[in-house]
Image (cartoon, one colour):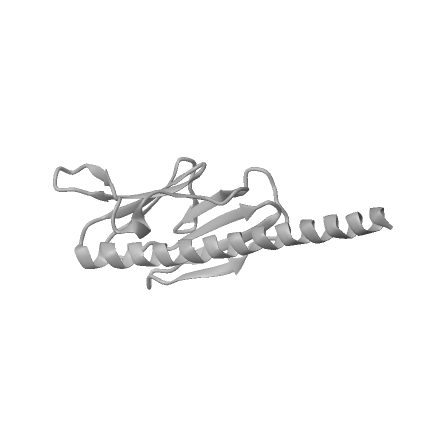
Length: 149
């Protein structure tokens, strides 16, 4: 009887952890969607290029300063360096229909770029698709996870 109860408890714990990972991945994907839209708006309004660098552990934003150099942004807080949740990785970036090789950099200027960004959390794939209107949509990506894609 005790073994059955422990087995049920272990199963419920595993399901709860899986739900937390799913919730974290959804929250992070929504956060990234919003901050990418904000980056496009800011670059367009201020007339200064802004870029996001995707790192193995997360991403960070920088802007082109008056000395013609890229300067990291720390404020507002949305543009401060941000870490991915455990197990989340950027799998692929396409800009204007062309795959980009690492290091992955997405630059915003007077007009937002058209891009597709594929994220993977464990075996789940999701794609953020940016349009020239500045909107970023979240879409399910291909169901199979292939190394290097």
